[in-house]
Image 1: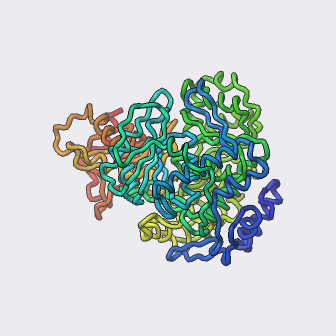
Image 2: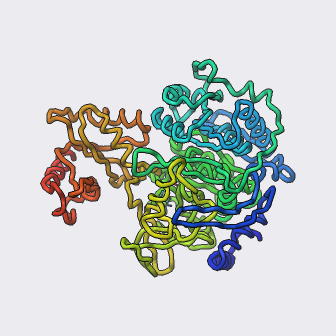
Image 3: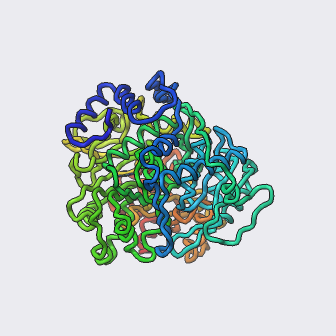
Length: 634
Ligand code: WTA
């Protein structure tokens, strides 16, 4: 079955087929579009109460043969990855499918010679350089489970993630370039590893030339090992349900959730959605501006594009360097056809002089995408009009680390866009809205966004904590997966995602749990207790506001924000810094002692008069005081 949907009729047909018989639908897609070493005996086996989900059981494959080897026949010389470095004057690198294949095989051999075997966890803490994509694929080549940690996370956050998955080996670099900053990654790794005895080996990629100290018997430069490695590396046979990677996402406790994805289902779904959502065709140049440290980079910089034999751009830098025209320079330079970014970047760029856009030739563009947070109407229109010339479809793609691939979005040119609406689900994705009491809502409605039936790329567990997986995603509403998002559905079946309904706040597209931030704040010697909430921010979408109770009255509030932010940067990373801090004498609590964040959210957002029922609070009197503090702080 050809999996490319090119018309509304084809979309409808696929949707109906998938609805009627999802197993058969995915079975055909998986069979006809990928290379399997052995066919599966059971397409789907699932039980959401456990929860257990298995796709293509009995099937054997290696995802890198699908990403690389199979393309060598027809497109060995075609560019697989265009590497655009941070410095616009440095040389762009074009890695052909053949180059990439060779580099992955060498890298995989080096991992093996360092004792890495199938099932071992390998942590990647790297800047956006080709070696990151190569390392991801090298792990997959030999069945090692990659855990990429975004290189903006602090030493403490990195250590938590290394310990949680018991990684044996870490791959990092002497540093990274990001705008006018140099990231000192090796020092961060050294600090993280003080607490990680399980890591036996650190392999270092040379990037910045920073002076680094190698720890004997642990650290080694990778280049000499690559130089002498063979370009042949047979792909290890993987069962369809063998783990492919772990990727951490924030949750409602301090411990991040290691979402575990498996091989066969993830491959099928990331490839299928890439093809259709970006309508990628031969000769296109696709660019996703995310970092491979996030799921968007996994599915739509590395796996999805390469599975389709596409040319994918990897950009090391930031949108503001050397100026805010950089994204548009890159689009012009590489004649980018599909461009995929986050609303926060669009809002930032929309605030810059339009001449930065109009001076570049963006005529190559065919599809524009957004991901990571709700996109507001103004940003949508600016993107559509000024980047897309009013003609090109904008796709608003809703999905999650947990879902592995895009779940709801308008197929470009096929499903009509509706600004701020992600619109319609992918064929095979059975979206339902639930009321608070667990009823399935019909027609136009607002409720909790759930998925009623398994799809191939759903996460299978939280690494090392299956109970938490069940409790977080499968126990709020019986028999379905709960996303943690709220949504509304219009009369035509279009979905609009309204935001998180749990303790996760999305700041500049990054998911941040309130608990780890509060834990970090509570480390402050002068703070007894804290609560963090999100408030609307015109660029970041949401920004963080902290309410803190001091240990004693004489706290010096002037320097508090910066000292708290230093702590947060150390414990988590600069992405989780507060924009505002308010010193209060108490926090509104329910009789069972839970902080009523709803009230704090409203106050932080400036909505101080309509707070709803506060009579059930244990300490309603603190609310007035908090409001006063809020007004004084302005
Ligand atoms: C939010 C990113 C509105 C949502 C791929 C989700 C969105 C969380 C959209 C997952 C969108 C993502 N519109 N909200 N188009 N895309 N979100 O795990 O709250 O980093 O649950 O995955 O981002 O973020 P994550």
